Amino acid sequence: MKKLMCFCLGILAYTGFAQGDMTTASINGMLERVQGQTLQLAQAFDEEQMDWRPADGIRSVGETILHTAASNYYIAMKMGYAPPEDVDMMSMETIKGKDAIVEAYSKSADFIKEKINMESAEKLGEEVDLGFAKLSRLSALLIVLEHNGEHKGQLIAYARSNGVVPPWSN
Figure 1: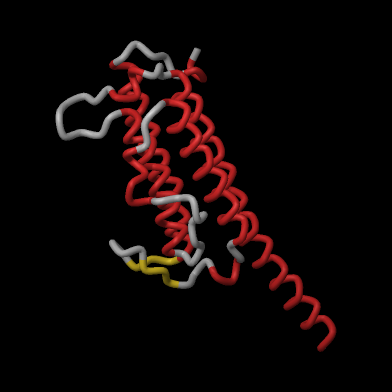
Figure 2: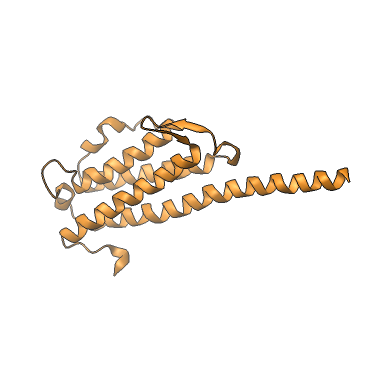
């Protein structure tokens, strides 16, 4: 009976770890799709359109892309992952030039996906203070996904306003 109980507990524990791995893999898979489309869209804008904004006081195309990149680093930092030494989140939105903007976003996308893969199932329920809310680590990862999706949608509206067709919708 003890052997059977130990076996059942072992299977249960393994299943818990597998679900955690599935959770981070699922978030990363969805994030990869959202970030891939954001990168495609960023590349579809021309150099001049990177400075387009719908009205004064609203982020431009380039600033929106860079804001999203900075947020990837910010949330990772709040979860205990230091950004690369060459990244200055505070001045990120001042980067100019389409190629530099696309590169900055791409680098942040790779960084956050790598950090998500480092998250372990047993820690997903731990609290993290994001500065604007105290949430579980899992919720913080979901915020990364949601935030990237939110700004992808904003960029789609910006694209349509400028006659740019999102490449994946052809």
